[in-house]
Length: 545
Image 1 (cartoon, rainbow, N blue to C red):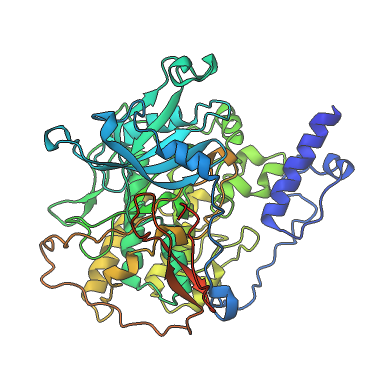
Image 2 (image 1 turned 90 degrees about the horizontal axis):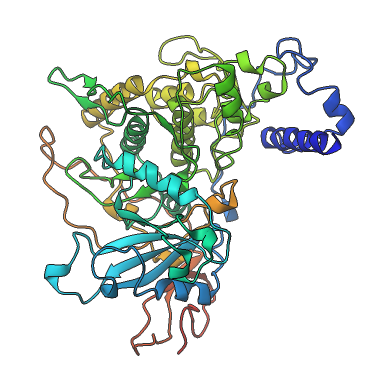
């Protein structure tokens, strides 16, 4: 019993601290007199929630606060090299010998990810793609089912042929016998490798961090286009398809298959949105793609039975802090009437809508973090020309000069109660109307393409960490030259104008190229930004001279 009580206290204290970092930890006695003793309406502190909020403020970019976070700690070079040197990697498509590991992209507690390229093989044997990302479970950790779950979701999502979902380029590799890879029998039948699409421009986290460091704001039109990509991705998870515009100009969708089961991502966060290239639908901004389905779960959002809510309770802790919606962090879980709260455990597409709004908040404000879970507010103004329906988040958005249309929609997506948030069709329709209106106005500005291209991937900033160490986000990097943009779609006669060059803070770092030689005797091209004064020589640490 003592162990059960201790676990309960730890759980309650975890979420209390999530909502308020300064909260006083509960003791076992406090817990016994608190947890699910009262209903939410009759709780002792029912009057403690205040309507008054401090004035909205813009995120400060002065001084050191605008600098990029420190770069990743370099993983052990031996682990990197052994991973990249798998020239006969099991399961990789085509002739194994022609694939070469060229860049280590990151690692979590249980997995590694790297970029592999097709090198030197005859053209007639070349696959349809010459680059792929390999995500592999480490052999020095116990095997898990995480990649098997992820592979299943990628397989289903890719049937929609959506440009907003990262593609799995080849069938996942399942270990037939652990002995084939010098592994134990516990690996038999486990999915060990995924072969995924490479997104050359990194993650949305890296993109936002660069813009903050360089003092480059995102235009409103750029924000609308980003938001549309995320809503299209969520539509695929919920319906297995995206909305499209019918002959009457209305957003519609083919009826979803009866066999389609809605999916909740449970880690919809900024570092799992990847920045790809351009296509015919995305001519001025990149395609933003959703990836990393390791935490995803099939959820019947219409099932509010006690059994379903109890199952949902087991999913409460999944994801990355800052992006968890109220249905995960609400204190309603602590009261006797939590199952009828309309918030706790009510998971569905609206959960991902809240997380998408958190990402939009970061892009609009260039903030390092989403709105705090401990700072809800009740708007004293109308939202979308109607009285507010309840508590919401993102108070500081009021201080920014974006349109009321954009800010109101984000405040609605931030509603505490899931049923108050607009649904996917409503959001998609409003985004499409806003893009059309913006293009017809004097605010039809969009960030230049160079704004979306990263520096050398060694400079990538540290992303937010997932709760489960096995699902630590594994970012992608690189910056090849983009292809020429395809023809503009019908209705766009001329390219959208570019933002004027922003005013920059004085440079505190400059780019320095490695002075060492590669093993092949060529000059290394890796560079990173370094503070003044510069060293006499710079060794990137990835090779010996």
